[in-house]
Length: 443
Ligand SMILES: Cc1cc2nc3c(=O)[nH]c(=O)nc-3n(C[C@H](O)[C@H](O)[C@H](O)COP(=O)(O)OP(=O)(O)OC[C@H]3O[C@@H](n4cnc5c(N)ncnc54)[C@H](O)[C@@H]3O)c2cc1C
Image (cartoon, rainbow, N blue to C red; front, side, top):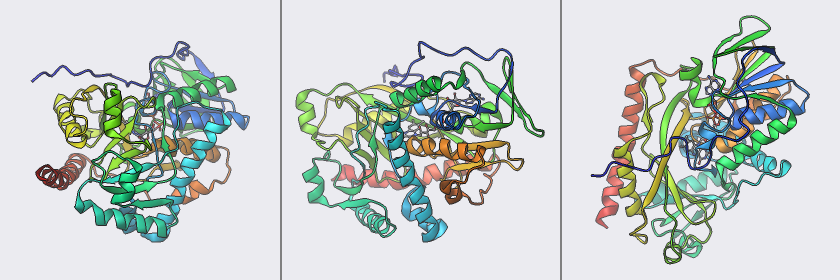
C-alpha cells in the first residue's frame, strides 16, 4: 500500500501572510491583551477597538493558523451534539435558548460580512443533515419536527424533494437548515485580520503566551520574548488552551479532525453528481461525515468522522495514513457516481470540545480574564459571535447571548478516565455507524 499521501500541515486555505507582524520583544502596556488570532480573538479585537479600547493581540504563529484557517467552512446553526440530544439533557426551555444563540451566531456572522464587505465566497445555500439509510429516517423526521416546534428554521426533505433538489445520490432524505451555508474559511479569517490591522489593533505574531499572572490588577501576560501589562485579558486559544497555555485543562479538550479535497471534477463528473443547490452536507451518522463543494465549485471537500484525542489534552498528530485510506474508501462508497474521482489532498486541525457540547464564554472569578472557547466544531459562526460576547463582558456591557449561555460547567474527568471516556464514546459511535454502513454496502 502506498502511504505517501499529499498532506498539508496547515490547510489548503491559508499561508503565511506577506505582512506577517513582528514578534513582541519588549515589555508593553495596553488596556486589554487578547491571546489567539482566530475568529474569536479577531472579532473581540475589532469590537473592543471600535469601543475605543487600546488592545493588543498576541498570536503564536500568524492569525488564521489555528482552526479558523483550517476548517471546512460550513456556516451552521447546529448546536450541541444535535437538537434531540440537547433537549434530552437540558430540557425544552433551555434548548430553545441555546438554539436562539446558534441562530444569532449565523446572523451576526452574516452581518460582519456585510459590515466589512468581506468577500469569502459565502454561499447562503444552507446545510443538509443527510439520511443515507432507512434507519436514519425516523430520527431525522423527529429532529425536523422538534426543531420546527422550537422555532428553528429547518425543513424535512422527503425522497422526492431530495431528488428534485438534485442532491448527490447518497442523500435519500434529510433535514435542511435554511440559515447559513458555506464559505472560504481562510479568506474570512484573513479579512478579519486585515480589518483589525486597519482599525489599529496592535497585532504581534510569532508570539507565544506562556503565562497569565492575574492575581493582581494590572494583569501580567508573559510571552516568549516580552510581556504585556494590562487591565484585562481575553483567552481566545480554543483547542490550544490546555497545551500551549496550561489553561482550561478541566473544561476544554482538543480533538484532531481530518479533512480532504478531491482533484477538480471534469464536466461529465459535475453532471453526474448533480448537486445543483450546492448545499453543505453532514451525514446523519453518530460520528458525522461532512461534504461540500469547494468555493469555485470544481472540487468536493469533506472529512470529520475519524477524530483523534491526544492523552492529557495534547494536540494529537495529523498525518494518519490509516485514516486517509479509510476516507478514500468511504468517499468511493458515498459517491459511486464518481468512480474515478480521487482525493488529492488531506489536512486537518484541532477542535475544542466541552463536556456538554456547548461553548464557554465567561470570565474568571477576579473578572479580569475572559474566555471565549469550546465551539465543538461549530465555531465559524459561534466563535465570530463569541468574540463580540467576550468583548461586551470586558466592556461591562450586558449581552443577552452571554446570559443565554450561562450555566454550570462541570469539569472533565482527569486522566486516564478522560482518555478512556473519549475513546469509549468514539468506539460506541463507530459501532453504530459501522452497522449502518455494512447494511448500506449490502443494498
Ligand atoms: C478540521 C476542522 C474542521 C472544522 N469545520 C468546521 C465547520 O465546517 N464549521 C464550523 O462552524 N466550524 C468548524 N470547525 C471549528 C471552527 O474552525 C473553530 O471552532 C473556530 O475556528 C475556532 O476559532 P477560535 O478563534 O476560537 O480558535 P482558533 O482559530 O483555533 O484560534 C486560536 C489561535 O490561538 C493561537 N494560540 C494558541 N495558543 C497560543 C498561545 N499560547 N499564545 C498565543 N497564541 C496562541 C493559535 O495559533 C490560533 O491561531 C472546524 C475545525 C477544524 C479543526
